[in-house]
Image (cartoon, rainbow, N blue to C red; front, side, top):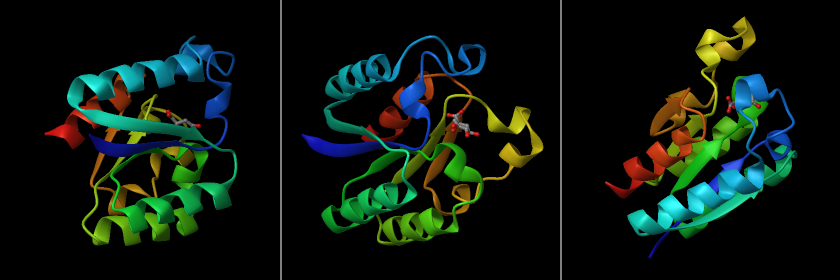
Length: 144
Ligand code: DQA
């Protein structure tokens, strides 16, 4: 089975209690269960991780690059300012491995600072605004 890393940045471990009017009422475990189930249906073995640390997230992107593993990435707030994460993603995608940037909300319809992604320019594709379905659509894109 094709292995996929599903990586999540800061505060996504707080899903369920964090601004449910924006991110919904389901928690990170429930997101992980949905991702795992859809992955199996699509023939993908998903490993799902979350960290609040930029350094740890960058390390995981390096791991994906070395192992040539495709990635679904919700960079959370790092989306808007982490050039270090962008540089790591650029190495991954320029080596021919896919990375799909996902967001639960639609950052373009929110505050101005969220309307810039420093990641999108080096991602293989971007899916935003469909709740947890953004992740499931990304898996579908990777499997096709
Ligand atoms: C987010 C959008 C970001 O602006 C925000 O910082 C997040 C979550 C989303 O999934 O909608 O933490 O990436």
